[in-house]
Image (tube, rainbow, N blue to C red; front, side, top):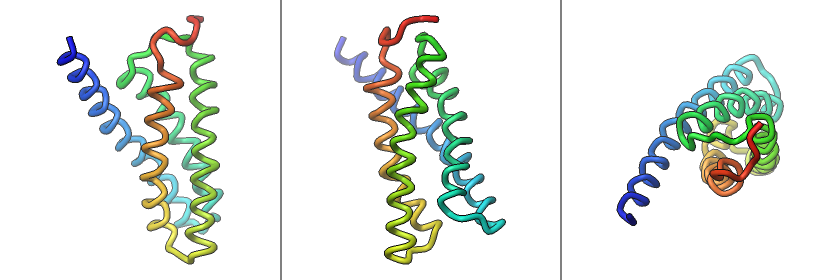
Length: 136
């Protein structure tokens, strides 16, 4: 039984990595496009976050965690928890870009490591918990 739990956990982590890469691509494409058009990096990051979170919710719910929880309550929980990482990400971007004068793309890459790990833990432990939320 322990073998299957480990295998399932590995497959879940692998699926999370693949869908996370796609989510990151969505985030970066929007961020880079907005920077290209000279948007402020914090505004660009926030808009990119909106696109990435919408995409991430759908793929995490359906492809990674196979959730059967109520959609409305789960989506609100997902967005709320991810909002915390947006605040952290914008704060870290501000520190790296404004205070330390790092380039926006280098800063975004650096900050992404923190947010990807944080988002997985939040999803696994607080949002897509089997049977945690009532069905709609």
